[in-house]
Length: 327
Image (cartoon, rainbow, N blue to C red; front, side):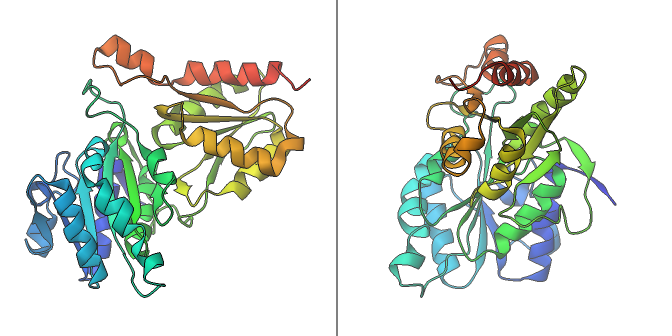
């Protein structure tokens, strides 16, 4: 079982699909040179420059070209350097890629994978550090996945490329150099399934992407106090595996949702609404969210550190959940 970094696992999944299927190709800014973080390094040398296409700095144009290619029978993988820049491609992605299957009565398919890098890491400031995944939850026709570990990074990449729908594949750059063993075939979980990473009985903590790590750290710390925390990695935001969450909440009676994106309008709000619809009478206390404040991402290191949720904030939320209850 090889040990891969998160970055290497994405490349491994991408390469595996490209080797098996000649209709898969990559396009984006500097992708033939490896991209900004080296995810596509070496692919052009192995498979040819016609399969890994450098593009101009024009995200809207690149997305439009990729959608046309997908409609023509190819399976393009587009790299958008930072999720902050996807604003420049929203028209093509939201108004065309997401809707053409529906508007054609099912005659058209858009097997498009869009790789975007997100998150706070390295003091890059408000234009290069956002987590904007919740924008796309609101667009019917798009799927959204956020792997938290190398095994999921490989398997979700392969699943996304094989899917006949447009998939937004959201990578946290703070995970790129984390390492773990990757079983053959990746994690083995279907793209639409959440993963219970730690069993517990007192509180469920549902976490997204890089926040899975602090959630597991908090669960380990609280175990020393006799508190049993169940940690669920959501993995896929669209479709959302509400059944796994509800099953967990029916056992623990408490739920905390953790994400790095700002709290207002984030994934946590959708998860809270869906869970209370299915499991309201199992809840012993209000559903809590641990998220970033409603502010632009700061650049100064101390402010950036204070902005991002951490183990201590999750531990505090668990204690609040355990000490509060409905009237």
